[in-house]
Length: 194
Image (cartoon, rainbow, N blue to C red):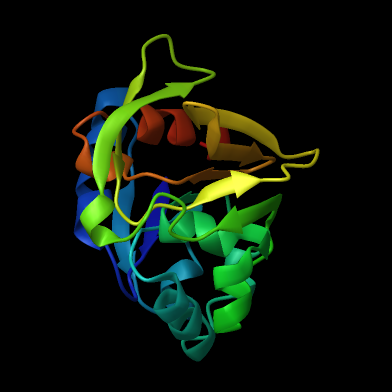
């Protein structure tokens, strides 16, 4: 099993370490790599789009010719990664003219909870977990207008902060910073072919 963390900008190392630990916990063999170009995605079984600045990540994905390689891979997107996976974007996405990968049927609102200084931690209800997940929200997006086959799977209060669709999982928060590996394990178990 080879997992590529798209490493053009953002929280890359944290995802590498969390994924390595999750693979070890699950007794899965393979490697987690830092992918900076299309070539690094060619042998990947799945990809992770980390948090960071979504407009910058989008531009670098285009510049490094990675977009086509990301179209079919199982993918976990967190924070900025969630923004990029959305089919459409709210006013902030429209104002920047940001290109989205359009992999998932929902509308994304950038900075839904405020700017950097409004970052916070709070329990998140995840439909497939028994106990709440410790959500770390840093300039986090949110999802709205979730359309089938996409499904809302994670909620902070009434706000949708997690969506699943086919082989993609988008999360508004940063599971890689929490020390809780359940979402990385869920992704590896349920989205990645072994």
